[in-house]
Image (tube, rainbow, N blue to C red; front, side, top):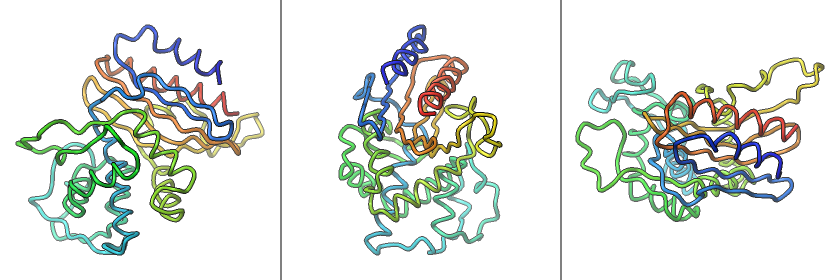
Length: 266
């Protein structure tokens, strides 16, 4: 893993921004971190612990993934996602709402789920799963959220959750598998997986079959991608957070990191 770490250090050494990175090779039991406890604005990565809180409520019998949600006009918000463009009164299951929150980073879906389980319960779920410094204060894309503070995460906190998910210990084995399945369907692929070969390619040319269960987050000056690499039989948890860097540069560095991880795991 030393070579991988050295390559990643080389990628970020010219960056003017701040980076929080955690890599953990789950097969070799090796871990490396850079600014692991540094706080970053969460952006859409906060949607991962929101998903966990919803699955926890399902596990405790408070909700069912098949429960219907009726879309309401006053719940629509801007930014990413398609729900804001659908007809009020449309019914979708909780599972569909979670899926859209994860794979399209749908902000309306996110706020629906925050209202469904409550901010306090999401905070409690985050603490239960070992997220010591990260927290959520408010819904997304609100005109006057009047937050106590910004939704915040650290690379270490997100990495803890991803490791539990990857090893089947997050909420339950079934829930972990379901969450991984959703994150593997991610449609925003312009960071960690951008430079990787198609996972559907013919692998006779020497490429290795791979999948990535991940979630991105972005606002101007802040860009993240976090997830679990599955390359052949190997698994690696990666959390890459960045702030105070040009958006094109941060995206380039994160995509280069993804490429380095893929070649390391092959």
